[in-house]
Length: 328
Ligand SMILES: [Zn+2]
Figure: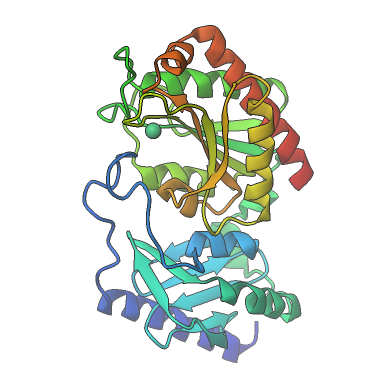
């Protein structure tokens, strides 16, 4: 790398650290770790993408984020987005534009979706950086790991001190989500996938950590599994959620899950949009499935039934198996 580039990049990195220290706020609200509590759904301004969603669109990873900036990287390039009001966007140490304003919601930086296309174009034009020997040794790129069929991260909602909702028969949601996810994992592993679970027993895992697990494993797909609750006891059906700013890949995955679940569950509420924290903090295609209503007597009975749980798991596994190979 030319000396001037190296100096530029050091200056950019220093500035990022300084701004991060200067700006405060951008903290998640209290109690954000409970799915049905505040913070499980974040409310960014319309037309924005989280820094993680932006990274996904650019085929990059978020390697660092603070209140002042975020650094995205892949094997060839580095993008730094600054969060100050006149924030610039740097590509490989050079200014390629401004963010037009960044919002911090629930501890997550959100940037205008209009930034995606200019950045994609700038990346397409930029000459590849040669990885330095130091970076090669210290930070092996997750893209280079052998993944014969793909990596799927399955997230059993709630756990431990967070039971989720409670069915009309008194069953905790966490005890429905886990067996469905465990059986889904068994089926996908049998098909040759690498499956990572955010929890494999009854333990509490923070929402941010659930998404971080998917990002760390460079997942091809993230699926969060929940069961629904409503004050109206007649509410029924399963729902597949994706983030409001979800890309085409997440939309495709959601449609595939909706179709496969429709073969065994009677009522689909269709694909819906909600910025669940676990969906906006994941870089890969991501969906959250609500299996049915624990507040509906008939569905609560089904959701507690082991055979029905296995059928749901089979449908989710088939959906993932239909989606992931099409993306690789
Ligand atoms: Zn839930």
